[in-house]
Length: 288
Image 1 (cartoon, helix red, strand yellow):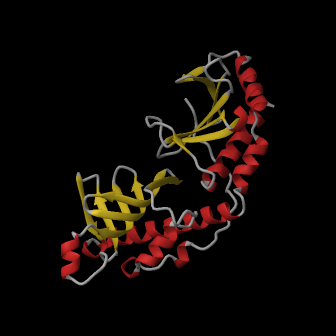
Image 2 (spheres, helix red, strand yellow):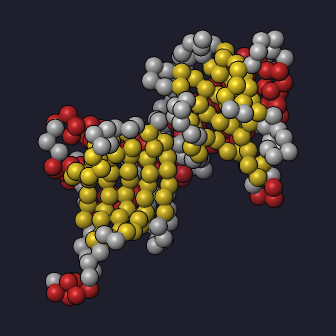
Image 3 (tube, rainbow, N blue to C red):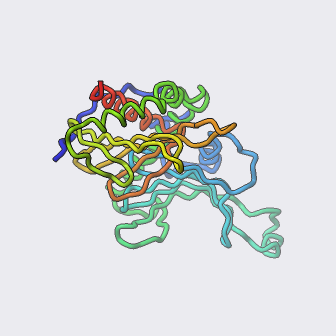
């Protein structure tokens, strides 16, 4: 049986351009403000449809640019809050036949902002506009999510404009040799190792440390770090993929809960990178 781990408080991360305090009221958002956030990481002039997923705690935030379907084109951010809600802040350009445009004396459709919620827990996938939400508690939650999104974007923008220092620090501190040493340490453990898929390891003071050795199909070793909280058992995966000139490039992933798959972490997922660095240091202390 494993205990829950208590992590030390993590230092506050710097923000740039956006933060919770300056998020603005949801019913006053215009298309320009939404588009600025979508374009925060560059490529504003690209017409192609694109998606970029980051992780706000254990909830995915998808930044969508130029999504197109039969109804029109949309860009914005979509936050999935567990299995309960999907909160979206988007610009919508409806697809209108040219004849109707001509009849209204317009050269192109008008782009409109849309702040909406889907109640997934209730099985209702309709987009309910913020202005139509009557539940005061739910409206307050939506305002809180928008503030958190702005905090996340502010941190991500700072990481982006400063060369991703959290990621760079991990690139310096993590190595194949270091994980190989952890693997050898685990193999010397006299107790039977527990398995999580291809990984074998043990719980140490609330932290599950497990490794997978390098092999012909996976030429670099990888490390699995799991921990428990009252809400979940989450995991980080540390490994390498073939990069330029076949040199190993760091690859990190998050598993939000034990029964879920792994999802790639981005260079701007700074809070996760912070926590991962702390857990890796704890693993090294156990192996010392």
